[in-house]
Image (cartoon, rainbow, N blue to C red):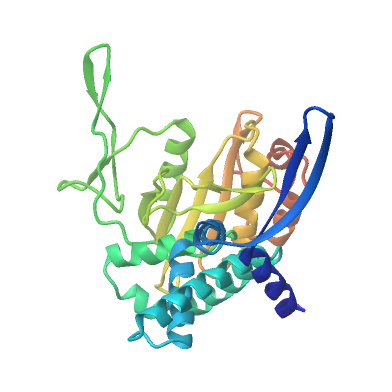
Length: 327
């Protein structure tokens, strides 16, 4: 069936149909005559360019080349040129098939996932610049993809804030993964964030903390969530590192986030889905918000909490309810 459809589309590419209008001004009559002519290169090229927007110019070009090399001898210029034209017609015909784009996208996504899984270890051994190229390939997917974080090595941070022509040094904190030569990290934290950092530093086994950059990058943890049926990205505020009772290093996500914002519930639901699919990656994944004057925390590693989040109407009721604890 598909072969017949493609052949029919190929014939339509090779044929231009039109209509001739003849008007009799004296008699006030009109006549219409249909006509069909063989398509010239301008018509074929236009149809090819339209198809290339579906399959991408590079894939279209290389597929045309592959068809031509398969059908003709490159040493024979005329024969090979004709084969190239036939290849462009074939691509143009595929572009006219209604189901082609969805089939093409599905096949490309499947093949990309297979290759990335097969060569994941080799990709990790490449330089950061080369890894970024593969990261960009993953980001072309219409569905969220897991991408390994790159260990941060350097970052520009403000050290002072200017108000009314007066510069004031920012507060500094210890034990951040990135720091200056004195071991200090400058940061402007709000009251919730200061409370979270202070509390986590006092926990047994605490080693380091990391303020997750809010800008996209290889060293920023981004988590997909659905908002109005479209994917968006949330970036949790903090990742804390600690030594567990068995001596292993564990990571905890703690994200203080206001529940009054319109995107609060979708973000919380996205974080809950992430917690379920990454339960072996983190020791704790917690969301913190203020309710009735107190900071409250939801433990997203618990199944009953995730289920409540999935069916909730708003985020505020979750932090005020019995599943949340005082932070």
